[in-house]
Length: 323
Length: 317
Image 1 (cartoon, rainbow over the protein chains, first blue to last red):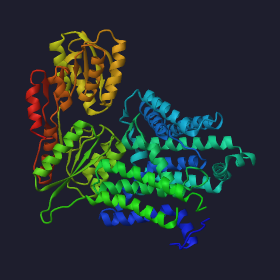
Image 2 (cartoon, one colour; image 1 turned 90 degrees about the vertical axis):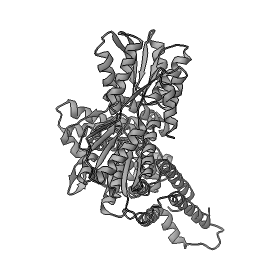
Image 3 (cartoon, one colour; image 1 turned 180 degrees about the horizontal axis):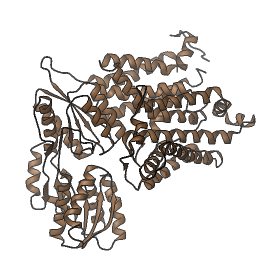
Image 4 (cartoon, each protein chain N blue to C red; image 1 turned 90 degrees about the horizontal axis):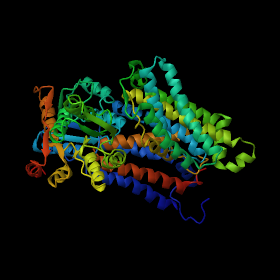
């Protein structure tokens, strides 16, 4: 509650809305800015590019949303993506296993790795940062082992259709992102599971005391993040026609950034899939915009860092005021 | 934090991009320029030299404007970079592909858009591009092989530091070393080989381990100077005298050769690669015809001719 404030710039109820949907405001401002700054920004081709460019991050960020709402974090999604990618590439190239089965196997591999995170965090009580950091390192090593240190290239053209094909004129990776977003939204907003995720993030002790199986939910949440990362690995390896053990480096940071910018609080309990999508868009527009404006590659990195910082600071300032 | 402070804070964040972007393009009105998009793969010292040389060439030609983007070692980013260049309506694209296979799809996309594509320094297996400007990677490996043969003999123990696996440089240089030395003289044994990812600290770390493991290494062949310099440091710190071979002839490496430390480096003509790629790309836009391969030769830089090389390079700064 605001106390002791003098004249307010914006009436109270609008202020609440503004804070709650601040990410939409930022997105809107950015679109205006970019449209003025570049005459190719708002073209259908560029917009389509942006959507396709954010699709893998969007998939990863959906799983990450659940994790962060519970008050945790997952640094291993980049490595899980790499493992899934090289595994799929390996199977596609060296075995006769049908592609649909390879698809499922890679998703399961991602889920299995994610569940390791979940068990370590929920049962062994290792802090999520440490647990997922460990898996990030070990997972990277696993990816190198499966691929023998070198990219697995020249994959089955049918497999490449996953990442390079289109359906109804829309690129497949975009479809994958849409499907994941919808499933994520339904899970989060319309199931008991989703409600429990919020409760755990809001107050874990209270959730536990009220009978929620906190351990099980946490394991499921990290498994979900792993499955998303697995899907991301399939999408990437099929798009670039190679299972690369070094794929996905720093992808976890983009996923976390999208989730935070989208309004999910690092302290847990708040967040939406829609917000994450907006966050992913904001990052995608910044990347695309800086390219269109020929910002030097070094400045691009600086800007992105500042944006993430700004998002976290904004989150800290407005935490608890927009509920 | 009250409302006013928050507003100021938000505005400040928005100011940052505005300030950064303010230094953007100011094109002279009038003459229509050929716009060429250069998509670089990473920020190694060598590649930075290539793109600087390209920019210098573009500056020399008053009808050419160069847009440079860098994928920072991320294949997906490079695909995105090229897509964004296409959206901006460039007249030609110069691609420095991060790897041989991942960029295959985007090569087709560019050709479908009907604009010329030149590949520089490395190439994709999808050969739908118009011209490749680069050096024959095998030649660098061959020069290293010849040095080993002439300075050590028909047999010996060699360790090899690879660049990023799958990179055309990694594959080509090894192929050259193999055909010139290892295949012809079975007395040569590879004690160990590993990738240092083109990085100096990796070259140092891996060589340190090798020195512990192997009693007699006759020569260390590194596929680039950064790794060679790392290996050299490991050798010197161990108080040993194993010759180290590099590729690229970076200023660091040339100085080391001049000091009698690094045994050999191979000059990869970044000036030639950078400037030719821009010249040829502009020419293709104007309808000129070129051979598919524009090979810029490698040159050996050893303790005999290092002085002359140093002078030549400083004339380019």
